[in-house]
Length: 316
Image 1 (cartoon, rainbow, N blue to C red):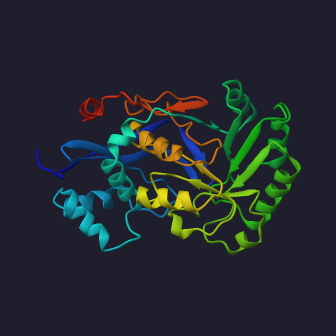
Image 2: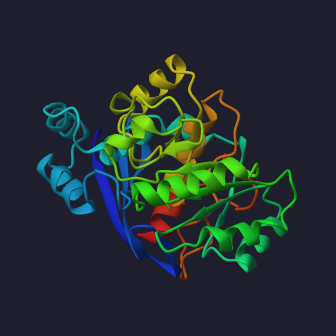
Image 3: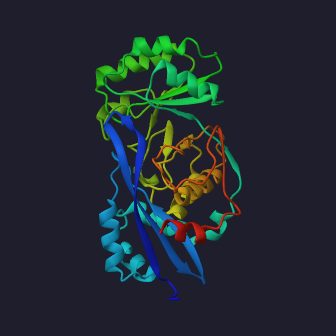
């Protein structure tokens, strides 16, 4: 077995019900599962791009792995030629290199309940499942007055986050911010305007969280909440160093990754001393899918005694 050898599996995941975002409806996603033979052991990672984020595609990641002749050292040399390229692949390689620690993670994180689609029934159904914080995706056609009525039956201590996925214009954003300011149960409005919109500098950072606008740590100067997707941010070591030196508020979030990527994302989130509710309510949403293995719900845990080698061969 060659030291530094890279293998990958290309998989498609089909949602039971499409995920409706401000950028449109997502019915399926493609994932690249990677494993590297390092230090006499296999380490695992996942390339998991998500629509709206400026990352490489699965095909681009496959191409550069093929260019490396499936060798870890060659791949690192290729990536070193461009420091800001291939953030998903860099995140996957970090996972492979640190898999011994990542695979042993058994901690527990609190998750917000993902409400899809947004309506009165789904909102209250998620609440009854035990989620004290709810996250709902909104679009330019979502009516504020209708949502206001839906929230009335939630208790005062409930918390709600609204994610626009960069789909609103400035007038719509201000309308939603008025609602956020008058409704104590709303924690923040997530990514209302497109990435790079100049009006962000004039909006209240305490009421807005950035998601698509945050990719790698060096790209952000936002003083409010940041939504960090560990599988999109590039090298995990750089991320961990930034976490330790920047005491900002961060919420860690899923990109509907498989069990491999989820184990990594949970481990990275647990390294942050920031205590908050994260966004990992993404399991159990795929058709006849064998790629979720963690238990979902308001509390999500790692899989410290899971046989990842067997998992790989089961799905191969």
